[in-house]
Image (cartoon, rainbow, N blue to C red; front, side, top):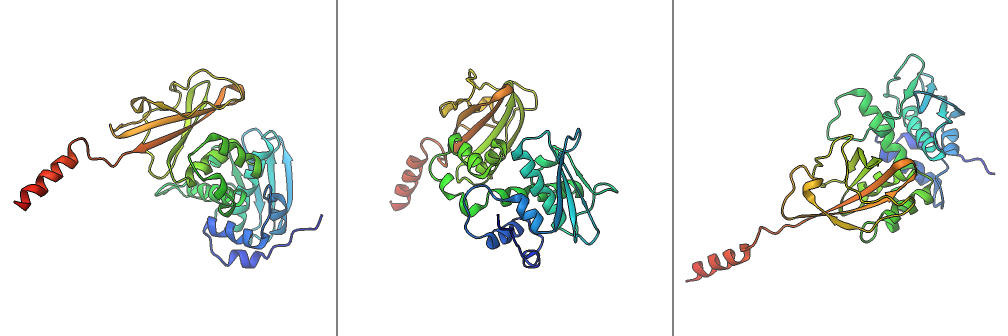
Length: 289
C-alpha cells in the first residue's frame, strides 16, 4: 500500500474552522470511494502512534507536545470500529487546533459524552466548545459533504441513513445525525432504549420536543432488524407546542439490545388558517368599490 502524504502546512493555512480543515484534507485526498482512511490521514499529519486498549471511562485520549509537532492517540478497543474511527477524527482536531487546551496534565481525555456534544448557537463553556468543534470536524472528515448528495435526494428515509453508514463506515447513530443536519426537510432523530427516550438531535427548523430522558415513546411493536413505514403520528405526543398546521410522521429502525432510531419529519404549513383567502378577497373587493 502506498503511504498517504498530506501537506499539513497547506491544511492549517485555512484556519481553525473545523469544516474548512476537513475540506482542506479532502482537497488533497482527491476523488475517493468507500470509507475515508482516517488512520492514514492522522499518521500523515504527524500522529505517529495510534493504539487500542480496553478503557473504562474514556473513548479516546491524545498525548501531544505543546508545539503539536507530534502526537499519540489511544482508542477504546471495547468500542465498535465505527466509533473508534470517529474518536480518532475527534482527537485529530484537538491535535490540529493549537488553541485547544488539554483536559488534564497528561493530554486530552475524551469520554463518550464528549463525543456527542453538538454545536449550539453559543457554548460558553470552553471544554464543551472544544468537544463540539472536534465532533464537527470528525463527521465532516468521515462523511464529506461533496459525497452525500445522492443520499439526501428525495423524501427522507432511514434506509438512506443505513446506506450512508455502510458507505462511509460510520455508526448508524452518527449517520443519522449527519443526515438530519443536511437534509432539506424538517427532521429530527430520536434514540431510544427499550422504547424509552435517551436523546435526540434536530435539524435547523424542527420544533422542540416535549419528551424527556427516560420517558416512554410510542414507537409501535419492535421487529428486530426492520424499518417501519413512515406513518403519521400525533404531534401532541411529541412536540412541546404543537401547532394545528404541523403534521408529524415517524419511521423507526429496530436494532439489537432494545436500541432504536426514530426519524421524525415535520411538515409545517404556511397557511394562515381557514377563511384567510376569502377575507383577503373581500378586502380587495371593498377597496375596488
